[in-house]
Amino acid sequence: MKSLLLILLLTAFYQSQPPQITPPCGVEEPLQEITWLKNKVSYYKKEGIALTIMQAQRGGETVFSIECVLGTDARETTYYRCNGWEICKTSVTIAGLRSWCGDLPAELTELRMIYPEIAGN
Image (tube, rainbow, N blue to C red; front, top):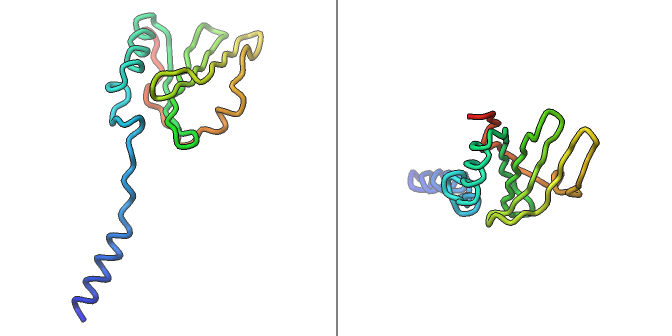
């Protein structure tokens, strides 16, 4: 009887373990391990441009968004795949929306900030 209870407990514990999650883009630390992303951060820091980098999922694919503050009245957001290929770019200025990424922003799930906004650091 004790062995049956032990088997039931072990089975319940085994099934309650969370599934193994594949790291985004196959790396644990995107900012340190993805060369193009690391280079973007270095460039913007050198130029003193404030930015925010978000990591998200879209249809099973990891997507990065880089939002830059281009002045007091302009922001630009560019969306990238893991390999650094640009998906689309949108910018908002005092004159309004300059380009458009369709439904892409609404399709993003599991958003998390991986790089906080900086200013001239």
